[in-house]
Image 1 (cartoon, rainbow, N blue to C red):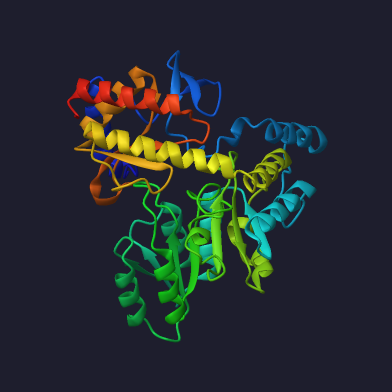
Image 2: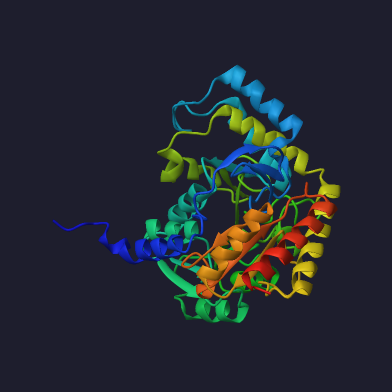
Amino acid sequence: MTDLLSKFDPLIEERETLLATGVKDPFSLVMEEVLSPTVAICNGRETILLGTYNYMGMTFDDDVRQAGLKALEDFGSGTTGSRVLNGTYSPHKDCEEALKEFYAMDHAMVFSTGYQANLGIISTLAGKGDYVILDIDSHASIYDGCAMGNAEIVAFRHNDAEALEKRLKRLPAEAGKLVVLEGVYSMLGDVAPLKEMIRICKENGAMTLVDEAHSMGFIGENGRGVVEDQGVIDDVDFIIGTFSKSVGTVGGFCVSNHPKFEIMRLVCRPYVFTASLPPSVMATASTSIRKLMHSGNKRAHLWENSKKLHKGLRDLGFELGTPEAQSAIIAVIMPNLEKGAMMWQALLEEGLYVNLARPPATPANMTLLRCSLCAEHTSEQVDQILGMFEAAGKAVGAI
């Protein structure tokens, strides 16, 4: 009998070799208690959280929590059904209304996760005979949406508008074309040149979808993302996002002004064939989204945190993923997985949690320590974080 798990033997061996050095498993950390958006108890000690994507710190917002508690009382723990059957409650419709208000768009569709939003929208839009043109560093959910839709996949070099244009010009003029871009790329935290790219797409007859998972809430004057910041929000066809970052809960969505968009509710399999989110989750999401519309001060503070941490880490001698702060993500590049894991553990022992990111999730086979800042981090906490990086970096020989 063929062991279908044998294909993972190299990964199993790599993991066992890493753990044999005495490093704790960086992919199975347990948070025993969460005290706030920025602090938790990990391994029995108080730990600053710098790897949670909780960009706007909404997970402990009083209004958000109260909305969830009320919906739990009013509607129970779950819907036990699909949105197209018994799974649409008033909080689901209210959440979609909140999204339409937030983006000033005509249509909004909520999915059970952000992953499902990409899976569903991309696979439904682009099928056999169509083309999906995407950045080679696109998120796994984007690639999986392409595979499920059975479209032809055409990748171009990361953030290279000229390469995008060359790819588009080689495709049949009459073919259906969907260009999928991200506002902020989650590994390095770098921003796409969307203004130039959207212009190229329009000139070459391609529809556009922009994933704003890592920019919603804090980039752009109203927090609508890179599309707003670069002035192209009215030129994109679809915006994908998630509730598990700045919104502070779980779920995904797509917003659009396309006049035929509502038919997607009947033809999008990851929307039709899965249970809808609990009403309590929907209530927390809609409350958070509406508060994010008026969070200019929090956005400004988050930018201050990001610039301060980026400069501080660079001054300490760490190699970073971007030449300047471009988002709430700051990637610290490590020479290899072993050194990265040692640094990750040294930081944890200092009282700091960051993400250890490794190939194949990372571009160019890099090992990264990915820092995700929060608007609730104080300036003093950022100073503490820099001190922890300095101590850990010197302890493991990273600086």
